[in-house]
Image 1 (cartoon, rainbow, N blue to C red):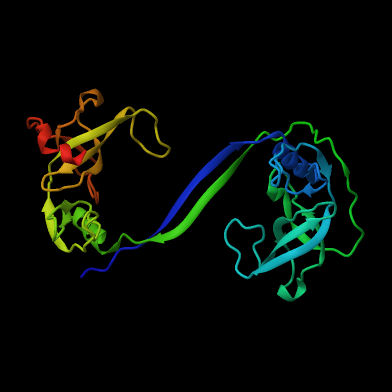
Image 2: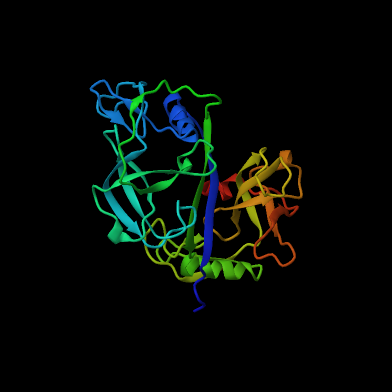
Length: 313
């Protein structure tokens, strides 16, 4: 049997969100080297600040300027920092209860080794050289033996307050399609579509899943299907995707290949978008050197009867 495929995969996107007045004041304060907490009705000071008391659910808005020094309440040593973490050398993740706060803030502690870190140690903020109104404006914490910082009430008012943030979400992992889909992908490289038949219900699944989703039994019998198929349903795409060189509008459809009992996805080309319809007979179009169909185009055959594909909608 051919080796099962695997490849590195990165899922990455920018997450944009607006900020409440409390969050805006907190992040703008970081830009100005000020750390703000919020005080609850019973006198607790929460850092980072939140809009609602986690105990009573009461809205809270009274901001307090807490200290830049604090105490480590717990910690864990990070011996192998990853991309995007606060420091590029081994460091400790710490929960720091800042002077004047009743909750702890999670951040990095720059220390020479785990023997230099302990619960109860005193630390202070090390600010980033360039600050933009983000948690990364605190570059890290560092050990400190000096006096406590001053704590005072703060109005939370700044010039040019931060109103929103963009966080870059990213997930790096190794993906393997498994035995069944490896065979499917390898067949596509030869311009063939191969599915697997369930030994119980006899349905042919394309792409194959290695097991029948209806009967729950393993599948191994390979069946070549297509290459032509029938459009079962479709949608018209009017928003251009980033890094996708396809002019809008275009049509993306479910296509039931001849001999298959499951519809797959594919783009429809070679026909005006407003002429695509359910039952349209289509065939794959391969780009030079392509490992999968670039799109599907009409075959010129009469439309398929609804009864022949209604179970595949």
